Length: 419
Image 1 (cartoon, rainbow, N blue to C red):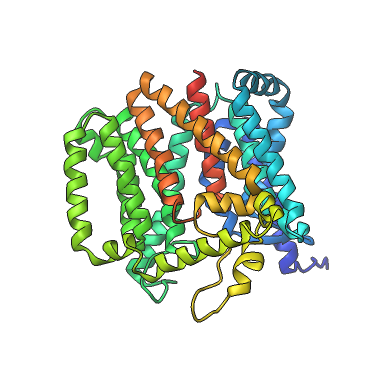
Image 2 (cartoon, one colour):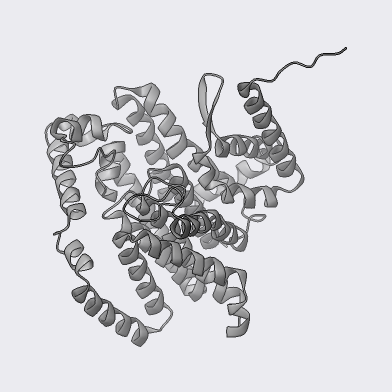
């Protein structure tokens, strides 16, 4: 009698990983557009973690490795010329891109724990910037509608689980704020906020009458996103989102509506004490941020080395917060929760300045797009504004899905500007 070997749990996981990688590689080989769409929808799949031998990995990294491998074999040689031409035509942007990447590499070794920082660098810098290059090279195939639709669909899993979590109480934190798959309510809003602006573009672009809009899939994606944001009770998200909506209305020449909405928001904020406390720094969350900013400033100005190089990747708690850490006063945090201080501490002054130049060029490109296509340009500018506004009090980049989101939006802006 033939006896079959008993598969261990590790062997089963390894088999599933191989099958998943093979299936995704086959899809990318047959239909690269479809594979791109699914890859973007898999941005949150970095939360599915496992060990590939001694090395930690995620479901998204496996799909991404397969995606990049097929691109290199099938399109790499041709796309190299397109990428080279893009950087030649956008030399200042290319310089900022190169310096930002260089600053990220330097920060691996500034951290004093380079083997640990290398893993973060791979997820926050290397992979997202490679994805940007692929989107630049494949811009004829991967048009704006495909990328925006994929980003819109990528919110579904986050929104549906977050709403399910709130309605059923399943894995709901004790404070009652929905977190979906993530560890904090703010993480939901940081991802959904910019994508909501792009989903609005699809609504306007694809639908010409109210009845059609009501029954469109994008409409319900938008409703689900707004519902889960409401369930997070994240004031930072809500304030940033309203700021983006006001900018969108203003740019679409709905200025009376924008002004009226702003007045109502000011009145509501004055009457709604949590918003007033947040803005006037009277609640604990605002106080904690001010303390983190103070710690960060003290560290950065303590020596020329700190000022120029920062802490290194993912070393904020160990080098900045830990000397002052008191578990009774504040939780352990890994970033200063301010977009400028985040980049300064993580990637040094070079990283901060080069990111600022990159962001400035993206805003400039979006303004050019606005002059040619008012709706698309307004939605892109609003999405970039939300990223900045929310980033003033949070961390809109240093997370696997958020880094991928940023560079996808960057490619969308850069490609549309080139058309």
